[in-house]
Image 1 (spheres, rainbow, N blue to C red):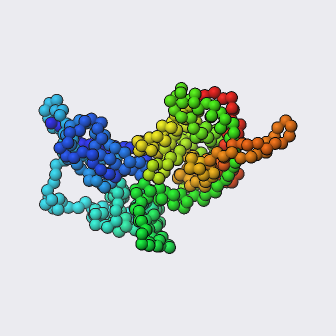
Image 2: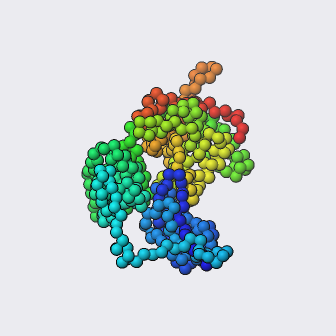
Image 3: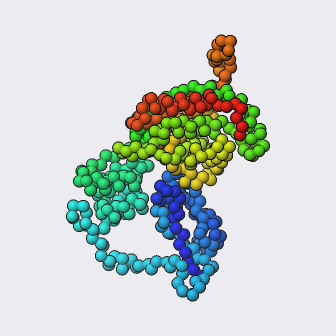
Length: 433
């Protein structure tokens, strides 16, 4: 019999750790290859982890609720395969050291940046929670428990993130004095406490709602938001879609909604104004080569998730319609992969699907712009005819563009949303699909 370690897999380019939500199998259970063994949560999505081998779950190494770094073992599986030469298992279990021997082993001595030596820090002595990734960085950089506790955490409930500790390390190398400036977490008591009366229902935020709240507060703190509004006449699009939707459904087996048509116009505007497809990194502006469109999707729980259409400019309208429908469907079924929720360079939010005529959306960091699509409504409007002006019923909608005023001035922000409206109004009613 051979034993193999099931490790925490890499679930996205920016994901370094995950939290164990629940084990779907228990020790002694048989497991098929690629069968789901546990559920984990990252800061982007909840997902299931499949087994890399068939066999029996021998031992669980990470408990539910534990935060585990990518690449670390989380379970041991006994497989049916035997080593060809009858030698040791594929991944032998580490030799366990007795508690007595561990106590007798001298603690390693480290030197801090000031040349002072101290024993390896015991971060377990702290009452504050630190992820394994933060602890590993602290050990590598010889950060003491006292220093670690002085770092103001910007994460959920004041948690120290990778960015926080790396910033501390950089400042320490530069000789800057670090002063703890606690950052209020979402769960901190508000300035004006809420009043609770008899009969009121108290509902605890779920994990996703806490993350959304934290990110929205951070975005407002980071980016000075400005919003520009434009009203667009989309009568041609309404008539064209009504004419084509049945044919599209029959041919492609998919619905033809307004969303991919609107996203196509936004992509064209981004190509015209590439300086809206940027990100801010300190004092640097990163001009993104790819156009990756985030698409806000409301979940049955009431929470919001933003899957990303990567290289959206490479799709034709049929391709956009299919990918929009697919991402929205899998988002509502909680079947998105972590990579499908990262890498966005610009975001679209369809507030019109809720009957709203306009909105002032909050930017998805580190992007600098987001457009909200309002509801399409029939309105009387003045139109020009060969015989003079006339009043007619037209299909109109509002577009609202929120942008980061640190790097996007009102002229650029306003021109981008105006260009989107121009593309929508010039839509070819004789277009084929």
